[in-house]
Length: 137
Image 1: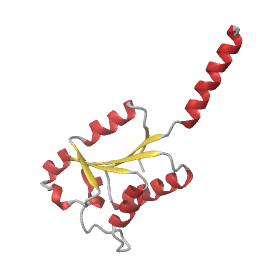
Image 2: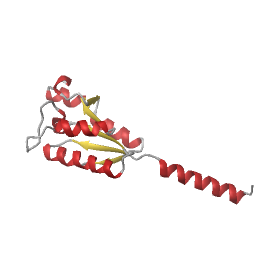
Image 3: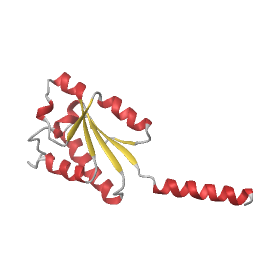
Image 4: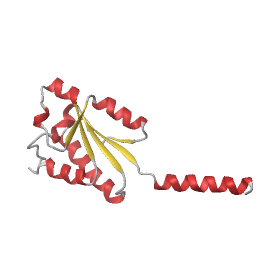
């Protein structure tokens, strides 16, 4: 096999592998209920268009509130339903443990779908270093 053909095979193989790679995205929540509504809608739309995307929602500060038990949007709809739907599609939701400490919150106050991370901002940075795109709704 000549060098050109070998190089072309390598380039095409590399391009095909890149095309099949899943997008990794971190959604960053640190604000109020309006951000939660927008972010949950963005993630649903994201997966509707790209079902293979791997999404992680990281929440800290006031951004954790929508993941608390009995939290409802401005129309009285529980956030938990939207979160459950997204978890069923592979989305991970992570809550900052520093926020828990600073706000005197307990893990038991959060919905079952919420996981915990030692630091929300460190987690966002780590996911970005691992190649995740960053979105802040």
